Length: 318
Image 1 (tube, rainbow, N blue to C red):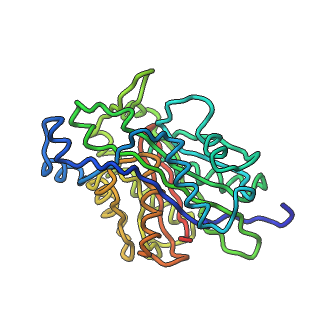
Image 2 (cartoon, one colour):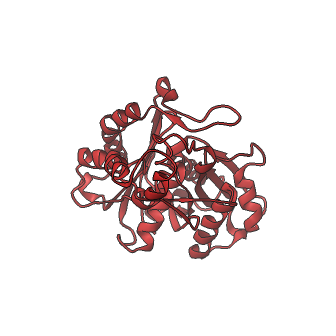
């Protein structure tokens, strides 16, 4: 890279969801629950469940869609980053498998695991790498197959989770152009790391739901406002809020405290459930595909969850 790089922007987005739909009525045949109970407590109506597809398969499908819409080819990509907490295989990492499937040669490739905040972490690290001159074009992916780790006899957790992937193609912005990815605001609350767990060799997802709910609805809005401030913007500038799709009540609680007067509050959780690291790019890709916000519009991304970790940044829609 010979020209000075001041930042990066998202060129294109893509997403993938399995075809199998699991409804609340389906779950009522498996555990002691019902459609109204689930809607009232978490706002979820359906979720998608993968059968034979792996995390890498879904990540590849989302990334391939984003790459096709970017105007770039596989040979142009020099960095692949995958955010996931549900890959069964320790090695090779998902990023290398995605690169192989898409025919991307010799990229830097790594996975990142901060659970539900993973995509915002991954997007920030790709942005930092581009700013540092370590790459020019990146694919950043959030992909999860949480159904592999769901206890389908536990009604407090099995109603929540779904599978899917979302991806973004990110490119360098030269001096004189406006960066499309704002500074990240990230951090963690490690003393509460046991609040969301996937532990051991044959694990199920376990969580302290009320503890996570209280933390998310009280502590996160000020941090999200700080992410807006770091981008040099005001709350009224934001055109959409895409936070981690944990459950509808958490999303509504954060949105109310943020008071973004001109923003669409995205609730893909209703049709997709909680897809952890995939939830933010999945929801963002759908938002852009439906043309609900114009190109260049500032959108606040904010992920949070296991760790407890959080990360957010303002991005401009491709």
